[in-house]
Length: 115
Image 1 (cartoon, rainbow, N blue to C red):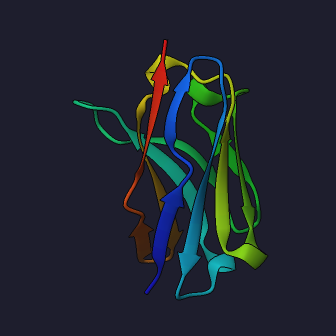
Image 2: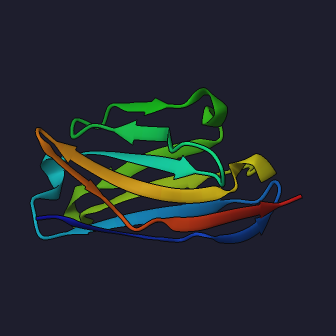
Image 3: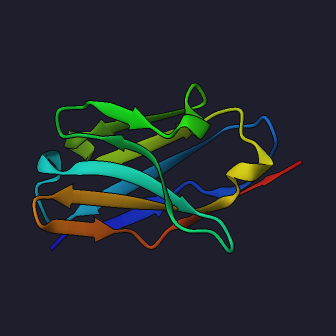
C-alpha cells in the first residue's frame, strides 16, 4: 500500500511560480512511474506531466516550457515546478503513482492563479 501526500499549492498571481511536492510512504518509491494530473471545476481530470522510474518525462502541450516534473527517490518525492502560471492553470492538482496493476492517488492540492 502506498500513500501519496501532495503539498505546495496556494494562491498566486499570474506569472508567478509554485512548486508542488508529492511524498510517498509505505512502499518502494523508485519503481513507480509518477505523474501529475489536474482537474478544474466542471472539467475532466487531465494529465499534466509524467516521469518514469527511468526519469523519462512527458508533458501536456499546455504546460511545455513552463512546468518541470522531477523526482528524488531518496526522499520518495516527486515534484512539479510550475513557472509563468496562468489563470487557466487554476485547478486541483493530483499526484499519481503507477506500477503494473497498482495505481495510487493523492488527495489533491489546490492551485489558484489570479489575473
